Every structure is written in structure tokens, then in C-alpha cells.
Image (tube, rainbow, N blue to C red; front, side, top):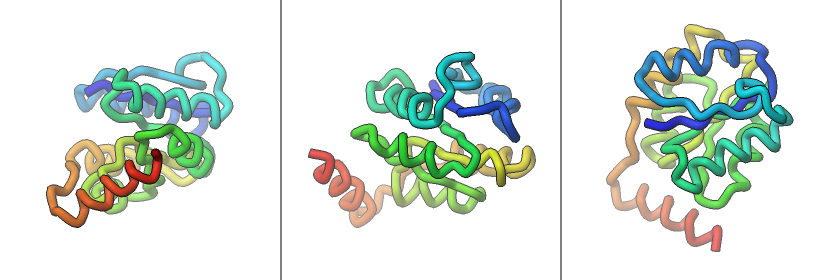
Length: 145
């Protein structure tokens, strides 16, 4: 998969994020501090989310100190469903029940081992085919229009 990645700094796990994604066999499209371009969280995370919305990337992973700004900026992009995930169970649920296409993580809270668990759960997850779950995702799309 093509994964757009954005971080507003190289703090915490940001310095290993690209290599962790590539280690799992994915191609990275970097933004912000991991690409030596404008690294303000609103700008770089919106660019990564925009890659997903435009089809340039299949998914995105966005980071800032708390992960909150990264998720807010990403969710402003139509067609994006960003989820701030602090553990593997939340990442799995975000993929399953919310069909999340952008993973937001906190650079402050996420350790290297935890990052590995979150990424494994995220990439192993897939959207639910349950009718009620699909109806919720369809409703989100309707609200954007």
C-alpha cells in the first residue's frame, strides 16, 4: 500500500515511523518534518490526509505531540476518517467499525514497542461488512455533502 506520513516534528517515534512502515512492505509518501517541508501540524497532516482523499495514498499516518491536532486537521479533509489511537485495540476497532483511513498517533505517548503493536493492528485490520457498520460510514459521507 501507499501510506502518506506526516509529522510536525522528529520527536518520539517520528524518527522511526517511516522505517517501521517500510519494514511492513508499504511505500511511504512523506510530509512535514519527515520530508523536510513545512511541518506545522495543520499543514502537513492535511496534506497527508489530502493524499488519501485524492487517491494518491491508500491510507495515512499523521503525528503531532498529542495526536489531537493531527487528527483534527486530517478530519477536515472530505472523505477522511482519522482516528487517534493510543493502543492496538483502538487501532483495530478504528479500522473495523469506523473504516478509518488515517491513523493519528501521539508522539508524546507512543513508545517504539507500542508503535509496532499499533501499526500491526492497523495494517491487519479491515472494514466491517456488517450492515449497521456500513450504514454509519455511509451516513458520514452524506454529512459531508
